[in-house]
Amino acid sequence: MDYYKKVFNLISKQHLWRGSCLNMIASENITSTAVREAIISDFGHRYAEGVAGGVDENTGLRVFDRYYQGTKYFDKIEALAIKLSEELFHAEHANVVPISGVVANLVAYHALSERGDRIIALGLLEGGHISHCKISAAGVMGLKDVSYAFNEREMNIDVDKSKEIVRKEKPSIMLFGASVYLFPHPVGEMLDVAREIDARIVYDGAHVAGLIAGGEFHDPIGEGADVVTASTHKTLPGPQGGIILCRKELAEKIDNTAFPAMTSNHHLHHVAGLLVALAEMKKYGREYARQTISNAKALAQSMYEHGIHVLCEHKNFTESHQILVDVSDYGGGSEIADRCEEANIILNKNLLPWDTLRDTGNPSGLRIGVQELTRLGMKESEMENIAIYLKQLIIDREKPEKVREGVEELKKEFNRVHYAFPSQRQAYDQIKFK
Ligand SMILES: *Cc1c(COP(=O)(O)O)cnc(C)c1O
Image: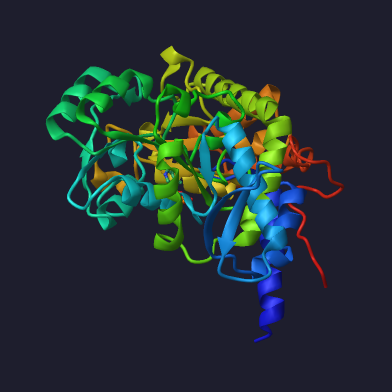
């Protein structure tokens, strides 16, 4: 087999296909051309193991003690990525070493707890992430997972009941944030009980980091979180990776856990790409975050008016990039997500709080995110068109191939990345050297 031909043929197909799709997976995004240029740079070939080495008196930027030669330009990039992260998240200290959101959580758990301690977070049915549970990072660190009480109508943590659970279980980590995340969690409201039992607050902002950096979601550090972890590629439109923000007094512990405990090399090209994405957020982030949330509300409202069961109508549906839909009357999340894919609308099935873990194969819900479409310049009126396509697929049971024609027509008009450094390239162009 001609493997060269094979692999690049598949890559071309992916670019062509995704360029004609409405990409609505809530945990994804599209990077700008500038970010993509950074991540194919020479930094992707290099190592820069090392520890924090203080601050340069002249520039105020972080310096590093490296074990490897050849890092003089990368050191400046990492120092600037740290500085911009601290600025955007209002944090005293940032660390850009974790290579993913899960690794960022592992760092936080390792730095703040002992094996056998408890962690309290949302359960999987309520939107918690696997890394909050015993099947993943929390379990690997020897933590026992306990769940907050959840108010299904409000789609948020039940503060009073959860305070009782916290007092009884005495977790060493109280974790906020989730993968299904419509409304800001009550960090400030639960600060008193955290202080009472001397728990640390870890805020997992994987999904909403771009909205927080844009200043349009709540400010977890301002509300009292000790540590914020996040992925760098969901609403924050950077390369795939992780980040940690924390208070000064935890800085040394977090840094020394990120390296050498949880990483060796930290994927330098992605740090370079992250710096570009952070600079774009500094310049365009507020506008992007505001439009994203407005689009999510518009899509939800329009779907609701077409008779689709969108959750939380009484709260204007969402304050984030996500909306949740119950399609249990129409064959369930798995069947509908498959039909949507045939129509070039890419989204995912999702458990809802009234499902059980046995429903994982075909849960009641769909989770839909509008951040990538927002980046492509779509506004409220396009959300109304998309709501019609979704109604045709969910309620009218029209043939997906037929709906696809309209989807492809609509998408043709939206193939440039907005809220980013300008570029001549289209959003889904394949970058080629040969
Ligand atoms: C996606 C997600 C993560 C994991 O991030 P990765 O970058 O995929 O490792 C962690 N926490 C939450 C809440 C998430 O949604």
